[in-house]
Length: 293
Image 1 (tube, rainbow, N blue to C red):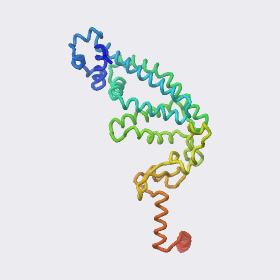
Image 2 (image 1 turned 120 degrees about the vertical axis):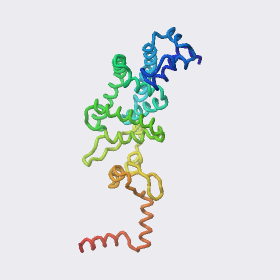
Image 3 (image 1 turned 60 degrees about the vertical axis):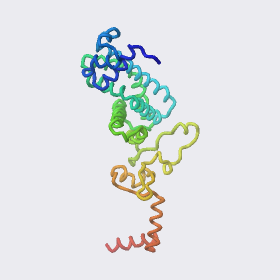
Image 4 (image 1 turned 135 degrees about the vertical axis):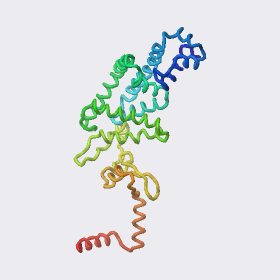
């Protein structure tokens, strides 16, 4: 696709504004990036603000298109899957396009106040349908007992903070690639999920497979409904149900290590061979020892 000079200017300006902000970017460097004289820019744009607003319009249109696509494509998903899908799609969209991501940061924080006020008003107007849909989804989840009762708008703010915070850290820490999104999402979902009388998170809502009549595997056999860690012996990942006594140790004390059930059984069998003590004899010994105390 052959770009016109006007389109080339917007592309160069996006890069300049994203890296240096509105104040830092100069018309001279934008002109040099395109290969024209600075004066030639004014044949296409009135000035720096006009060029900036043209770039903003393109970026904002892409953002609005992304929001509409996410809402449409997640329409028939379950509450959990819908929230996860939009969480993930948003992050990946901006993670793959550094210039647009940085442009938004510069625009929302460092643009001159008189321009920023106009942009805020425009952004809020574009976001209204998406925000309304998100609040409806959260409220529906609360009514169904899937999400704990709270103020939907506050919960939406937490959702955005987690989403944008993870996007930022994926930029800073190269190791945090896209595959980590669902790992961090699990922590967020456990935070907003409804809980039972024991303080444990309820099972995740039915997936799209459930809607077709295919049941999920039980909690004790589904790694998706467990907290995962690595076995100290075989180094393989294994799941621990939230009801297991080891769960809190692993979740809140990351230096605590455990072994999977298979390795634990092997260790127990080896100990029995060496000591000659069966589990029944150990239980009996503990009863006698406690009486002596």
